[in-house]
Length: 402
Length: 65
Ligand code: HEM
Image (cartoon, rainbow over all chains, first blue to last red; front, side, top):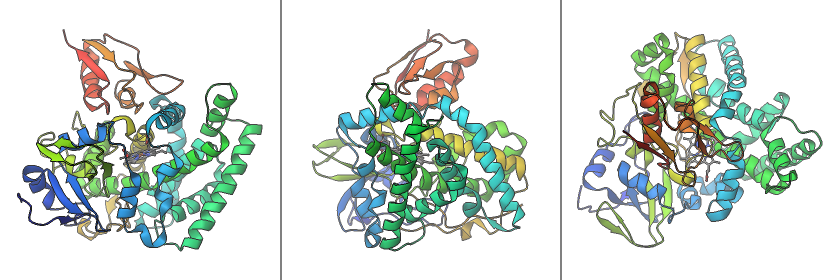
């Protein structure tokens, strides 16, 4: 594999929906800084080792450039710039730090413990509806997709009767299934109108939710977000937190059911849920594009100089199977400790919603194990299909029986 | 064991609080790490080690005696 004769086309194609691309292992061993070309033809460097990916993501000199990632996906034809979080949420320097600290106070682990009972009810209700409509069922459509959007609604203080609309807007904005540009614009307009009214209502009648807390913070004379920033933040959270979590729920359940002894172990010992969730995040080979960084000065990576101006794609999923960090990286050890996977990125820009995502994944798994211990995949794991062409990797459907 | 935390490095991911809630907390005003127990008992050492090893910004330092 080294020296490389041709740049590899990126993203690489995996063997099947839950398995990694065959090239990863060789790249990590022989070619840790690989030449690739992106779908739009642009050249980039691909990093696959844990050490290098971690160092690149944590390096404050190289701030993220989401636009590189999104134009590199095949979203071009639908003009999917709604995925461009950087327009909604400040992504660099002081502005980013300010935003992160203002919003971060809501995303603490303690707050997530408070949200837990509400999440449990959401999971229980969705599972009850799923079982009521008979088997086999698509766990993605019935549980994985609606749960994170309902949780975000609760967080923003959006009443339960408006959840379905939120879910529809989010689906359209995220382009999970294909919509026309017009439908996307209409959804965005409806969402913005709705949120503007919602923020207004929270001014008048604050409650125990993120929007009220951010308004209160501003009005108490401290630094705070203005209404436009609140709107951008709401939209940013929906876009960053819905599709990612929805897909991860589907992939986690599929991986645990693909070898049913994993599921059975957890049914008999649910105290392993926390480490099983981390291991699912680590073992997820279908994470999507990875994170892109623009290298703003010549930089040494794995003994090679990456020249200024290069786009570098960090594959967290490849790094998460690095045999130098994880023993038996292609297996699943549901009790792996510590598990320093990079599924949420790392460093100052690592996922703001990670405590929320972890709690959602843990609650979903706990409730499923309790309510549907007999759960199984309704078709062989090799038949699971990946969603193509999105920044975030996922499965089309997760057919289950119980 | 003695623990120190670097509040300037912390990004508020909350991993340490999820793993060892008796030792770490997050400040109300911005979600940044706060130490509840700088010298935790032996029963907590495994959790504290895990928290330090998975911290996304390596903001937790352990001084073993
Ligand atoms: C399993 C689910 C999730 C995964 C795998 C995930 C992954 C990530 C990753 C890899 C990043 C880093 C981007 C970068 O370094 O450029 C990120 C950033 C971010 N995520 Fe998540 N995420 C998930 C769920 C969520 C949720 C539930 C929310 C909130 C509702 C959220 C909000 C954010 C925000 C706001 C950022 C930007 C942080 C910043 O720039 O400081 N994420 N996420």
